Length: 86
Image (tube, rainbow, N blue to C red; front, side):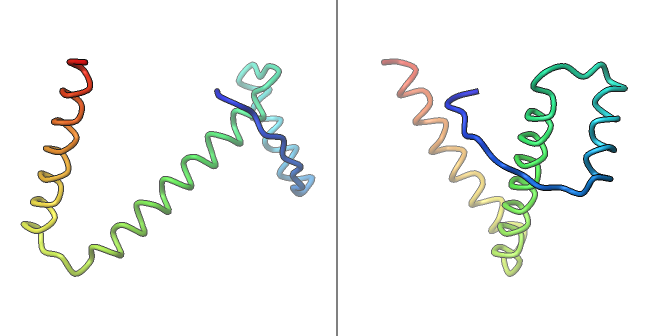
Protein backbone atom coordinates (compact mmCIF):
# COMPACT_ATOMS: atom_id res chain seq x y z
CA UNK A 1 0.00 0.00 0.00
CA UNK A 2 1.24 3.47 -0.83
CA UNK A 3 0.43 6.61 1.08
CA UNK A 4 -2.52 6.11 3.39
CA UNK A 5 -5.59 8.31 3.83
CA UNK A 6 -7.77 8.33 6.92
CA UNK A 7 -11.50 7.91 6.53
CA UNK A 8 -14.26 8.34 9.07
CA UNK A 9 -17.09 5.99 8.22
CA UNK A 10 -20.48 5.44 9.76
CA UNK A 11 -22.29 2.15 9.27
CA UNK A 12 -25.23 0.55 11.01
CA UNK A 13 -24.53 -1.45 14.15
CA UNK A 14 -25.80 -4.60 12.36
CA UNK A 15 -23.28 -4.09 9.55
CA UNK A 16 -20.48 -3.51 12.06
CA UNK A 17 -21.29 -6.67 14.02
CA UNK A 18 -21.71 -8.76 10.86
CA UNK A 19 -18.38 -7.66 9.39
CA UNK A 20 -16.43 -7.95 12.62
CA UNK A 21 -17.91 -11.42 13.18
CA UNK A 22 -16.91 -12.46 9.66
CA UNK A 23 -13.38 -11.18 10.14
CA UNK A 24 -13.10 -12.87 13.55
CA UNK A 25 -14.18 -16.24 12.13
CA UNK A 26 -11.37 -15.93 9.60
CA UNK A 27 -8.75 -15.23 12.26
CA UNK A 28 -8.91 -11.47 11.80
CA UNK A 29 -5.96 -9.37 12.84
CA UNK A 30 -5.18 -5.68 13.14
CA UNK A 31 -5.71 -3.94 9.82
CA UNK A 32 -8.16 -6.51 8.42
CA UNK A 33 -11.10 -4.10 8.64
CA UNK A 34 -9.21 -1.49 6.60
CA UNK A 35 -8.10 -4.12 4.07
CA UNK A 36 -11.66 -5.41 3.74
CA UNK A 37 -13.04 -1.91 3.10
CA UNK A 38 -10.28 -1.09 0.60
CA UNK A 39 -10.82 -4.34 -1.34
CA UNK A 40 -14.60 -3.82 -1.36
CA UNK A 41 -14.21 -0.26 -2.64
CA UNK A 42 -11.76 -1.38 -5.34
CA UNK A 43 -14.17 -4.13 -6.47
CA UNK A 44 -17.06 -1.68 -6.67
CA UNK A 45 -15.02 0.92 -8.57
CA UNK A 46 -13.98 -1.78 -11.05
CA UNK A 47 -17.57 -3.05 -11.36
CA UNK A 48 -18.90 0.44 -12.08
CA UNK A 49 -16.06 1.18 -14.52
CA UNK A 50 -16.84 -2.00 -16.45
CA UNK A 51 -20.54 -1.14 -16.42
CA UNK A 52 -19.80 2.36 -17.77
CA UNK A 53 -17.57 0.97 -20.53
CA UNK A 54 -20.19 -1.60 -21.51
CA UNK A 55 -22.85 1.12 -21.69
CA UNK A 56 -20.55 3.36 -23.74
CA UNK A 57 -19.80 0.55 -26.19
CA UNK A 58 -23.32 -0.88 -26.37
CA UNK A 59 -23.77 0.38 -29.94
CA UNK A 60 -20.61 -1.27 -31.27
CA UNK A 61 -20.66 -4.64 -32.94
CA UNK A 62 -18.35 -7.47 -31.91
CA UNK A 63 -15.84 -6.84 -34.69
CA UNK A 64 -15.51 -3.16 -33.77
CA UNK A 65 -14.89 -4.04 -30.12
CA UNK A 66 -12.32 -6.69 -31.08
CA UNK A 67 -10.58 -4.16 -33.33
CA UNK A 68 -10.39 -1.57 -30.54
CA UNK A 69 -9.02 -4.18 -28.13
CA UNK A 70 -6.40 -5.34 -30.65
CA UNK A 71 -5.38 -1.75 -31.31
CA UNK A 72 -4.93 -0.96 -27.60
CA UNK A 73 -3.12 -4.23 -26.93
CA UNK A 74 -0.72 -3.50 -29.77
CA UNK A 75 0.03 -0.04 -28.43
CA UNK A 76 0.50 -1.39 -24.90
CA UNK A 77 2.82 -4.18 -26.08
CA UNK A 78 4.88 -1.74 -28.11
CA UNK A 79 5.22 0.63 -25.15
CA UNK A 80 6.07 -2.24 -22.80
CA UNK A 81 8.84 -3.60 -24.99
CA UNK A 82 10.21 -0.12 -25.68
CA UNK A 83 10.35 0.58 -21.92
CA UNK A 84 11.77 -2.88 -21.15
CA UNK A 85 14.71 -2.35 -23.50
CA UNK A 86 15.78 0.89 -21.79
